[in-house]
Each structure stands twice: as structure tokens, then as C-alpha cells.
Image (cartoon, rainbow, N blue to C red):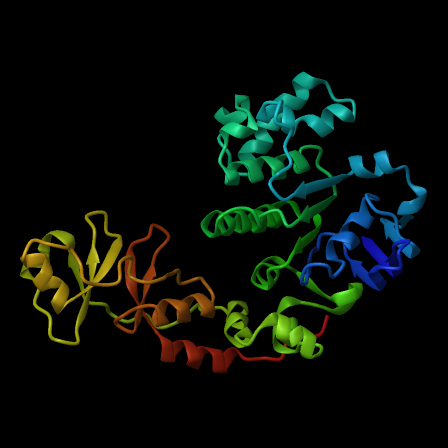
Length: 369
């Protein structure tokens, strides 16, 4: 457990970075510290491994006051992931990952062997082990950063805006990877971000910080969305918090409707009315695009293939959330979201009205804290 009790960080010029913070992060919890720039979230996290010392109050890790623990010993038991990975450019990937085990006395040979397994665990091909950081993409570098933090199997992991420097697609992949790893490893994680969507998606608990290092609210993400503590939290969470809250409702059992579809090779024989849409299916059975009568006409003239929404809007897996289901329905030009199986093949359509009916049945007030 990580425990802050009336912790304050005040600098000599009078600036208060963290103001009387009291918060507990239970063992195995992924807690996200979120808030605008300069609100004290990163300072709070860095006090956990004594990169910054508190001015007053008590911060304990597993019952030990961190100010009474040797900083080097403390840090060897805490994994740390930062923005842009922070890899050592002169070391190969495998040696970057093996750094902490070697510092803890493990032989370099054994540490390198174990590093290969950790690389696989975070979704990287072990063939990348002999490359240098500059030879990797940004997303690959961040995965190496996570692997390095996990290499010594620390019980605690600190992550300081680790995905803010990568593009949105890679960021989503890395978020999914963290959720997968956490489901397997159950580390105690403190994750810092300024992105409320990322906080809601990843956190078991979300701590919202405000200006002057004040903790405004600390609760489960569903509670923060449905019951923001004050106007400051409400403003930070955003006006569409009701829509984002749909991710906490399951879409299991949602009715799947028939969708008119056509094989890509059979478009020339397709007949559609003025307001009708069909979903184009590739030879592998996966949806490719929506097409209407105008698109069919263009195709027959031999110019652009589709005058339509490419990709069929957002895809929806039947075991997903009501947010995914509604997003699929709203982004589809036909009004039916595209539901696909685990192999990406069409299994039916999702209607927005059905999503709202399911919400009525599941709606509840989230428990505080």
C-alpha cells in the first residue's frame, strides 16, 4: 500500500506544489493522478520514490516512511516509466531492460535471458532485443520502457505520462497493453496523466488534482463521472461525461439486427433505393465499407470505388460496453452499428435505441470511493 497523510510540498520561494494530500493506494490498485499542468500530480508521484522529498506530512510505502528508507534501495523496488521512454541510447534494447536486475546483483547473462521474456510479455518481438532505441518506433520504445520497469518484478510501478508523446492509435494500443498486463500481474500502479479519458479508461481509482496541488476528488472512475465533487471537477471531466460513463455498462445480450451486405466482387449486381445502404464485405468475410446507390453508380462508371463511409464506422464486439455499441450506431450512415466477432467478421447490427433501453435496465448510482 501507498499512503499519503497530510503530505505537503512547499518550495523555498513559497510555491506550494502539493497541499495537504491525504490518499491511500491499496495493494494491486491502478490509481490515476489526473489534472491540468502544474496541479501537483507529478510531484505527488515523484515523492513516492523520493525523487522529491515532502516538506511535511507522512508518506509510507508498505508501512515504511519513505524519508527513512535509503533512496537507492527504495527505487530498486519501484518500477518507473516516463514520457518518451527515457531509454539509454548507447545500450541495446535487451541491456536497457536488464538494467535494474543487473544493478540488484543478477548476472548480466541471466538478466538478458529474462529480459527476452519480459519483452514478449509487453508485446514486443524478441528479435528487437539487439537493436538500439533509435532504431525503434515511438510505440516500441514505450513498450521497452514498460519492460524495463517490469524486469525486476517490482511490486510498485510509477508511470509519468508515459503515452503522451505517441500518436492516438499507438496510445490506444499501449493503454490496452497496460490493462492486459495489470489483469495478469496486479501491480500497485500510480499513473499520471492530464487526459481525463485515459484516466477513466485505465484507473481503478481516479484522483483529480486542482491548481495549487489540491486534491479535489478521489473515487472510482464511474463515480467521478456521475458525481463530480464540485464545479472544478465537473468542468475538468467535461460536458459529455454521461456518454463516457457508458463504458461502465456491459452490452452483453444486446439485440443484433440483420444488416444488408454485399461481397466486394458483387457490387455491380447490387440494387439499392435512394435511402438504402449496404455493407461491403471483403473476401475474408470482414466488413470494409458502407455503400449507397450513389456509390454503386460511381463504381459502375469505373471511377472511385465507394462514395461512402470507409471502414463501416466503429466496430462493436458483442462483449463490449454500451459506449462502444452506441458509438458504432452513431458513426454508421445506415443507423446500425457493425457488430463483429473475435475474427472481425460481421455478425449483425446494433441499434442506438436498443443501447438506450439496455442503459435503462442497468442504470445505477455508483458507490462512492
